[in-house]
Length: 500
Image (cartoon, rainbow, N blue to C red; front, side, top):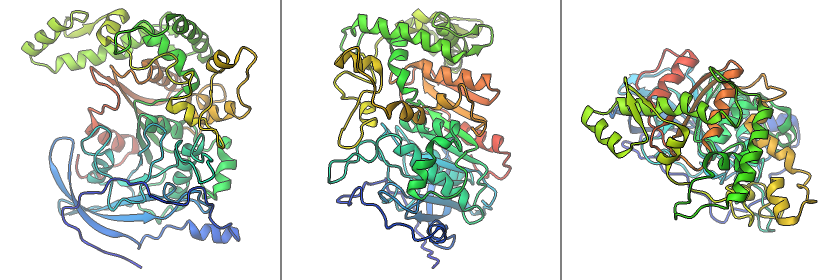
């Protein structure tokens, strides 16, 4: 039954996790393939019509009338519908002008942070503020005439009444793939171009966005998707938007020490320099396996990776920032930051200069697979009633001795959680070919080389890659959201955007 409710000046509610949900309870088994298919059919006539004001990236407010569809679950056999549900927002009019969204790009918003569970089931309209505040990218996309899908996903902290963790790896990526499959399965019923799905996520959400892009239609996930009763459709996406992705986890401790090993913690003390040096040295061996190359530098190694980051990413970032300042403000900034040189309209500095500018590190050693199993990432690789596990031999053997071996399931789960696995060796030809990657230049939540390596590999593969580090910005920064919306229209070949 069609539902039409006009709500003026609506402020979308934030996602709220359900309280008292019977976690871990499985839905009734499907009786036939036909019934499973029926449960996954999107009803285009079941919506609420809403009106809201959305301020675009230029500060202009737009009145947007849109249809808000709630989907109880995007799989036939959900584990927890509080998280395995999605919402679809479809623009109807923008500032009084009718919008035809039938061929519009679909922006797939990932609300995951910290690999925690993400729910949209309690939302009564399109999601509100974005990561760190400001207008969400989903709202900006809606105001541009795009279709917006917001999908929930299970996360690492979910535990049922028996003490079993049911949102640990690879649950989040499996859920998001199932959500993409649901959208594609409903081609012609869900408005928008299902062949132009663009993902968007920050931090762990940025990692999952990258992973969706890299792993499209990979058989690694098939058994998990089948168990959930995911739709029989592709889970490949067209383009990726990823901000500050916390990814490549099995090498993240090495990368972090290579990048920040000599910097003090924010309290002033140094991390254990022996452990740091050991991890940093191991990072060189990992880099050698990637066989990355960069223009003007050839093969990237532990000896020239710093130069690559400075020349390719950091100096252009500083140059853009400084060029935008007035002469007086630029002079003041340079006086306060003597490690940065300015000549002929360009910033220059060495890697050592940049580290001096960075000043401190935010995580101890090991940064991700810590010895006492207290980090989010060790929880991500928990299983059964075990809340957290080591996922690197370095940390496991430090605690349990040199003969210790990783749990049998860990290597496969690491592969399923790492976009680089799908880009190195047996390269996935179903991957996204368009990438928008952003990070804060002062983001010490993970090594700056994580984004640098991802960028280099995608460029080596010939993909369309737009990567920028925001100068003097930290984790979760997004300083050009309007440009992202414009970029979507360009790569998707969409001519119907009506606002910025």
